[in-house]
Length: 533
Image 1 (cartoon, one colour):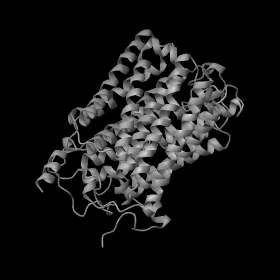
Image 2: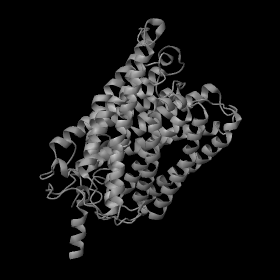
Image 3: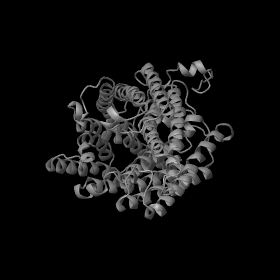
């Protein structure tokens, strides 16, 4: 009798000591969902405080701790690991016809490191909180800030090693464990996106880990690294931090782009338009992304010439993203589109990512950025990319691969409804913030002039709708585990290798190692076979 990964052994010990990439993906799914709920709760408190101009719900110090908790949890413990650690862990071996990742024990270690870092971060938040913002800017974080800065920084430092190990595992697996016939240009674009992301994780994460360690050293021992009073340079921290943290944006969004490539082709029943361009654009984003950190520092006093160079490079990095968006749109053109739940999330992603990308060009302009720097315009832009992009793609991917992960179908009506509720709630939450930022409302202020209240009320109302939209999938996906109809091996009639095995998959993924004889996304061949039969 065939043994599935879910029914091998239900004991806690078997899960905590597993080296099965699918089970580790589930462990990440459960952990990341918990952190998403906690980070969302902090965001709700922030929006409730901003419902009125006066700071009348929490104190200024408590507000600083709330938005820091929201930022630290969402960036380091949700957005960065979400798609690679859950969907990448679960499906990359299956997509390339492998039995597991190259280093199964390192894969399990990456989850333990993630949990250790996350629990330390939560301990810092619960045990007094931190008020530095998620960026830990010096010299405030290294000298003046109250609270558990060292503990939170240690948590982020440890979680960074989880990211490094995941990236290393993906690189080695993709290079060495592809099925016979699976050449580089037959790889799914989801794999290409994770391959590019892995290099950012391996090359960039040690930089931010080092600079956060230096903050701790200065805070503990008074070494003059970033504090001007001790001969340090606070701008050195910004250079080192943003050298990683802007590429970190692509750790969040590149895997999301890989998800969208899979969904667009499946639900339009077409080969993706310009496969090679989309694949190479992932590599281009990863490479150029390391060269644009200075656009976060246009108002820091850097030279005009450095500002012009960083401005040009920031426009340049938008080109491969635009290539992807154009090719997705061209793929949809004259496709046989079905509006299943994953496709609704995909269309939502395309709209929100386009707005986020175009407003990023505003911030790449020196003159405009000086006006809107550190205002709610930046907050809105960031969330359109990270939440409107990454989270929409993450939910789209979860809905797409849920039947494969669990062997169960969810109710389509509720899936489509949740996608539309999230889209409406998101725009009502964050579009008013573009207007607030352009009008001059600074970010991270807990009180504001009365003329900004109407837009803030709209934003808070949108946040309530958005929160309800996020709770809906949690409810009906859990419901589907017991009551959902059996999915069968390939409910979407996709051509990917991961769909050529049972749902849920057997422990070793495939009964026999598959052999690849055609290019990725050969939907026209599939349609021709269906017509012939």
